[in-house]
Image (tube, rainbow, N blue to C red; front, top):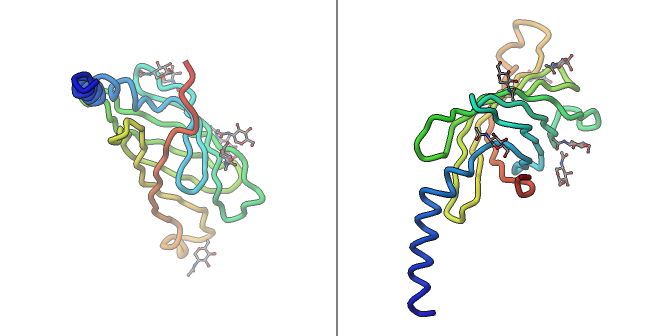
Length: 149
Ligand SMILES: *[C@@H]1O[C@H](CO)[C@@H](O)[C@H](O)[C@H]1NC(C)=O
Ligand SMILES: *[C@@H]1O[C@H](CO)[C@@H](O)[C@H](O)[C@H]1NC(C)=O
Ligand SMILES: *[C@@H]1O[C@H](CO)[C@@H](O)[C@H](O)[C@H]1NC(C)=O
Ligand SMILES: *[C@@H]1O[C@H](CO)[C@@H](O)[C@H](O)[C@H]1NC(C)=O
Ligand SMILES: *[C@@H]1O[C@H](CO)[C@@H](O)[C@H](O)[C@H]1NC(C)=O
Ligand SMILES: *[C@@H]1O[C@H](CO)[C@@H](O)[C@H](O)[C@H]1NC(C)=O
């Protein structure tokens, strides 16, 4: 036991750094963020493009919230398996659009975290109101449940 522990530690560190992290950070699956919103990314294909659905927990009129489609790209060709990505959400219940960009990281516990920034554009009635049309923010996503398959 005293001899085995350091070896296991070395193995798991090596897998964490090189093996597991390459498998992880595939955006496919169910995610939740720090505001309680959920999204499902259906499948990241071999080119890195993906579609999904976003259930927000926050809106100008919360009683009207409906799940909304999203469309994006994951940048696949990086060496450490912690890719950048971006997607657009087409809000189905309001005249608004959001874009998210971010990166998937594997934290020190081996858990995937999506660090994102977003711009939210609401519809403005006049060009004079344009200055007030766009909001910026950040969100952090973690997996809602273990990935299927
Ligand atoms: C959004 O919420 C609806 C209704 O609760 C649910 O059926 C759907 O699976 C959810 N979608 C996502 C992407 O979480
Ligand atoms: C991501 O994972 C899904 C589900 O396991 C799989 O179908 C898809 O091929 C993977 N995409 C990439 C680019 O590895
Ligand atoms: C990715 O793009 C290709 C080519 O436009 C398309 O055939 C495929 O369905 C797309 N995949 C997703 C997950 O949207
Ligand atoms: C996100 O999923 C959790 C767990 O299933 C659920 O409790 C919560 O209501 C969902 N949030 C939204 C905005 O759909
Ligand atoms: C985008 O949202 C609008 C308004 O809900 C809807 O009419 C349109 O079909 C949506 N587009 C896609 C690609 O889902
Ligand atoms: C900014 O825009 C929102 C929504 O269009 C509006 O309700 C609000 O009054 C505006 N704020 C100012 C300071 O004009």
